[in-house]
Amino acid sequence: MTEKEITMEDLEETVKRTDEQLDLMEWKMDNVDKELVQQIDSQDLCVMNLLKSVSEVRSDYQQLRRELVEVQALQRELSSRLRAQLRLVHGKFARLRQRLAAASPPR
Image (tube, rainbow, N blue to C red; front, side):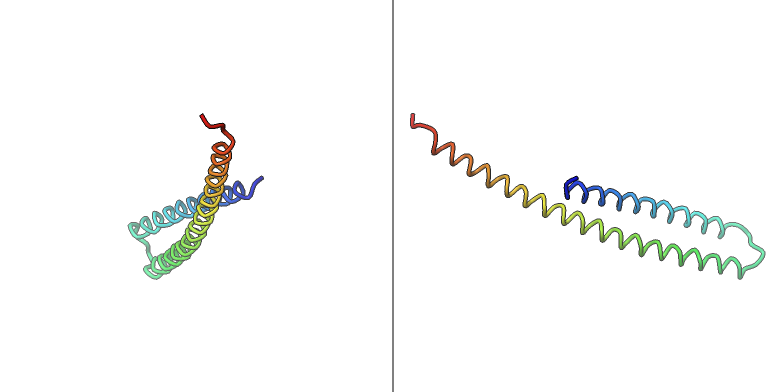
């Protein structure tokens, strides 16, 4: 497996984990909304659950930000590598064109 393929797989895996984190955050936010709508006997319990949920969402958000930064870094790295490979291909193409021009007989 080439390094580019490994990088792409890493990128895809990070995006997949990020999607899962977003789904989890959405689920947690739905639960918070449901808890707020429902009547709970103990106001303190409701506040504690809300604080816990907010803390979890904040933690998930921070993890998501870290993963997005990682994805962006991988994208920049991949883009840089692709540009370098493209420059190499262009260079080889130009050299081959020069060789063909030098080797072809005058008409």
